[in-house]
Image (tube, rainbow, N blue to C red; front, side):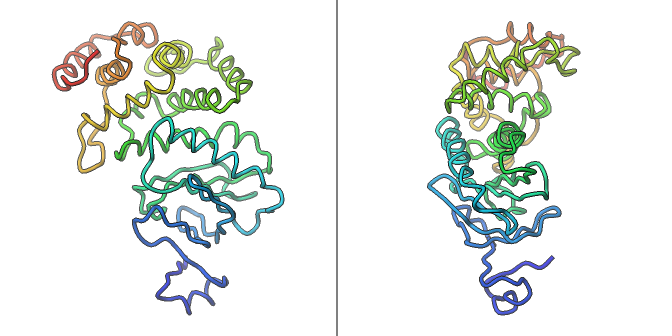
Length: 297
């Protein structure tokens, strides 16, 4: 795939069939080029910067109907402004939100740690319709949650991911987002869905009700999303890193220890109700208390 760089501008003008092409080429997530060429996975489109504010830079490929997308910036900006107000800045730059129509369906994320996306926070989505509720009500906020988990507070990685399998954290993020941005009907709908009898997962034990028995009580009783931000803060402060990258995953005892520190309360009883409490977790918890004594509750 051809990439266009400023020193080769004359060659790139012909080769890329665009009048001006500026591609992010270094670790400056604050840059918002007017035209950006994709160069990740199978993506190879030229993207136009169509709108921006202090939180978001919005990019469309050249097949997007601009007249059909006037609500995109308000939607993404509201989501991201609430997110950084709740969890703190994610790097120094804007969220770069990219949209396609009828290609690259679904969404993926990248963080400002990722060279593959020119060191920018990115959510890149392909739509089937301009009012694609599957994307805007579900997948986009899910991917935003993954981005937060992967790059909060200056740390690269998601050490709790092997435990909550990404999606269980994303449920808590989404529920809080809907409440916090005035989408109460959507919050009520997912609450009913995720607390229903059929809303179970096979991890860490069969028939686990993650949202009903863990995530929602944690949110309800310990300060809403503040408890999750505190969890990420404590991880960034105390959990082992190599450079800025988390060195390893959390085990269950460490997870409950750090989450208890975030809540300011011993969450072992809640975890026992939600997940069970095998002897191995008790040994891990005791080790975590010795290894991370600054975590108190």
